[in-house]
Length: 389
Image 1 (cartoon, helix red, strand yellow):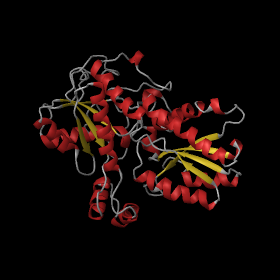
Image 2: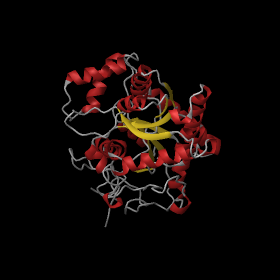
Image 3: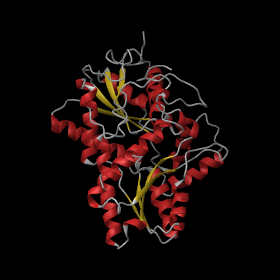
Image 4: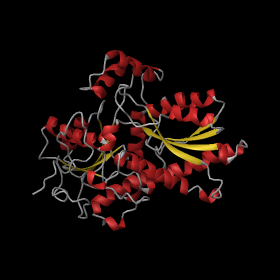
């Protein structure tokens, strides 16, 4: 019989979607973490790259990005704001579910959150990861982190952890981008730049091509970019389709999916094109303005503040190109409400037919499928909230 590591009874047998109500005790907000001072930067980067053989000189290069902001990543304050917003929305609805917060790479760690849960008597947790899409780093690695934290704390068999589905096409996640693109296009139109001279760049974190190909279950047959690329492309189409009411079919600006923030050696293929290369090419084609949409991110953390607000905007400025960067969901009311709705899907066992999804790819799985989002270099490790391996 299939058994899902660390799962509640409703999810333990590995159904694609759990349509049985579960009396969760608390929400586990799981994030990446970030340094909160200059002395934290290198230790944090060592945590992030542990086991990957990244030389110290490369860490120093990346450290420059954090040091430019005083050694403080914005992500922890953003998670504090999100946690407070979730708690306020729960209180508004009269829902008694505390929110615990734990990180992968910096304080507070996931093991700290599980220890707190145990001390407060919370045994059934529903995890909300701060990443919307399917890939090793954005889904499976979090599931591995849950398994590691259960082992580190000795709480496997005591605490159970389920997770909400990947929410890339949930209305609460997509609506902030629809709003942001509409505002960005309006700003550009106000400068007198024609739609045919404007391009919308949907951008997300690049990942190794091998990881992309293995993202999502192989049975779905997403092709070379796997579920990761397919999900981003589908969401981009939804966001652009929502702009059609402001433009005629012939005037709607063109758009494309680009990537950013790659960190691997040049010999390793990663998803392309890079956003800066794309901006160079668009300028050569006569494009005068770009709307930059960080569709792969939920908040303005370092990959947004540095790679987009610093590097990409500088690239656009070098071509005297007008560039508008769209906000991430952050604590947008639709996003906060949507996250609570995702929790309630699992608490109440909402039938899959009644779950909102804005693309034909979703609603995504509650329990990740066998072999989903394999890391080819590292192999399969124990992971909660999914069917082994």
